[in-house]
Image 1 (cartoon, helix red, strand yellow):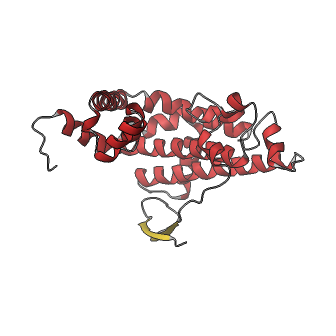
Image 2: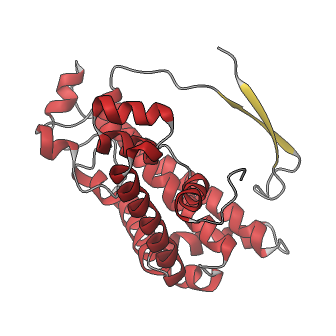
Image 3: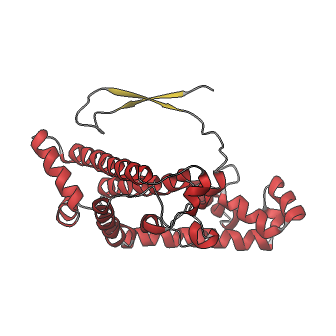
Length: 264
């Protein structure tokens, strides 16, 4: 298997290193615990950090595998920190409000300001996000290692039979993450501009679904064949689920806008 290199300028991302980073990406292998990973468990402490309402433990009465537990919280770290960065970049979040309301942001911003005086505000924010990720990862690894070492585990089933997940933040990590997510919910996810976009996106998906299920012959040939052989709603749902945001908007225009050029 070959790695795929990507050369990225990192001046804008990391204050402690100048130049370029060479990142290597490899395809992910399938594993025997894929079903657990796709379930995205939210049992115990982990459910505080995942948006899904249905939980693995509630449905199976067991804990998910360690891999699935890790995927769950790693996902929470990734989307929370990157949403914070995106919110700052597009101006929906402000440095002042984050500094006043999110202790972990304030702590690391003060560190960066002291270590790199005169650094631009945007580069300081990038460095803060990097350090927040590092803090959360370190906390998760340290606390999870201690929990695992405190158990006598001989099989995957021993992990499943526990009453609590083993991959978890410390109490301090939980508190920091909870404050960050609570602030993002109020200041970013419920921001009127974000809600407008979400509302429009919902309408696009709803209208496409209604139109394609009513007139499946409008589907591309491969999905029309699926609709005939395996059910219209399933085929339409699969087609829409595979769309990017941009493609969905274009498809909406193709289907509903009479003046839309077929060549677009």
